[in-house]
Amino acid sequence: MPTPMHTFKFAAVALLLASVSTPALADTLVHNAKGIQVDAQGRLERFTGLVIGNDGKVVQLIRAKDKKQLARITKRIDAGGRTLLPGLIDAHGHVMGLGFGALQLDLTGTSSLADLQQRLKAYAAANPQAKWIVGRGWNQETWADKRFPTAADLDAVVSDRPVWLGRVDSHAGVVNSAALKAAGITAATKAPAGGRIENGLFVDAAMALVEDKIPDPTGAEMDAALAKAQELMLANGLTAAADMGTSADDWATMNRAGQMGTLKVRILGYAGGMPEMRAINGGKPSGWLFGDRLHLGGVKLYADGALGSRGAWLKAPYHDKPDTRGLSLIDDAELARQAGEAAAAGHQLAIHAIGDAANAQVITAFEQLGRRDKGDLRWRLEHAQIVDVADLPRLAEANIIASMQPTHQTSDRTMAEARLGPNRLGGAYAWATLAKSGVRLAFGSDFPVESPNPFPGLAAAVSRQDMNGQPAGGWRPHERVSFATALGGFTRGAAFAGFAEERIGSLDAGKHADFILVDRDVSKVLPAELARTEVLETWVAGKKVWAKK
Ligand SMILES: [Zn+2]
Image (cartoon, protein in one colour):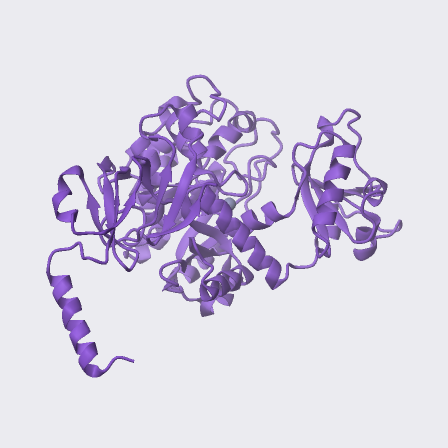
């Protein structure tokens, strides 16, 4: 315990140090780096290193000419001439979903029923504590006999506990007999409307009969999923993510990690709907917790579904199914009511809209809210995938942030063409048009729907091509953006979209020293090489938290 005199002396010395020129002796210098970031005007900016203070924040960004005054810093980290970027931020992901997905049995790419059985057997042996075995990803269309698996096929491998294995498209799942028993399903059970049950196979609406019986994860399982998600994020160069649809249990898990000191990444939470908003933190935004590693600042709402299942709500019928326009999930009055309640509680709004009708509905709701309150609103339109060309200019006018996922474009382009036909794609994944009109872009991946790896996203953003370079020349290539705009979307833009731009998104003085070292100069390589960039080290708050083995 220091005496008052010591305290006084220490304070005086600290004051003296602060008043003379930075950097101070206790700082750390990261040097010999090829630093690249996006400046406040959206241009690429190059630097050679940074000075990190004891608080894990950037004291100074170093350019070649700054060398002399740094001589007195003795704590040095040589970046070895490697490329250094600000930690990347995923503006739209599902943190717990990423962790759970990675911990469950992965059946993607199974070549046969025997292969599925083999993987199930190995997973069951490796996870003796799991009360249920849950997996997904099989596709019998890729097997020689194309026969659907049955309960008997699974019983042959695991009979001691319930098994639920979802098909690759999540529209069917197969169970073993233990799961039938646990779910109370007998030969007399009738499938609900819109569903089907056959030899242990549950299709569409029938799936809930089993899925609703799978026990909620325990606290320990939640902790394990969060740890796994963090590991995947850090390994992919993500130091922060917006968590789109945080539940009260998710929030409790993230808080627990913060209290235990195991929260390494930064999570910008968006409550998954109004009941979750009310359940978390008494309905109020949380402020920044655990050294800016956790923040609940908004609410995520849904206006429609997705294109794949034709749940996206369109202004005109589906080109490949003219009897439907998809589904609106919320009417105008209810959307206005929920959005108003969230905004009044101080929450930022992030609303999912895929189809052009849903996008128009949400833009209108934002415009109407904006008229009532002229603060710094930053409405977030999540996905903004298919926007009517006539509605595109309304985003900039209403100060709406477009939170978009470049890899959705490369994954969905042929499906989007089928669903909408050739003449309604003018405002589809319209990154460049929106950016040019003054809209701020925030880029993400929607992990685990897509890989959390942001580099294929950066490559898609600049090329409109997938990992295999398809299609040649890029899909609707006039919507490509520059590398600076792409990198900005995954750094400054994503930070701004989360009201975090004073904390993260660049390595300017005063922000957290969150950065990554990568194996190539991402500003110079071709898109195919950009997509394959490997992360070598990930640093958060000036500490190395992940390194490639
Ligand atoms: Zn999502």
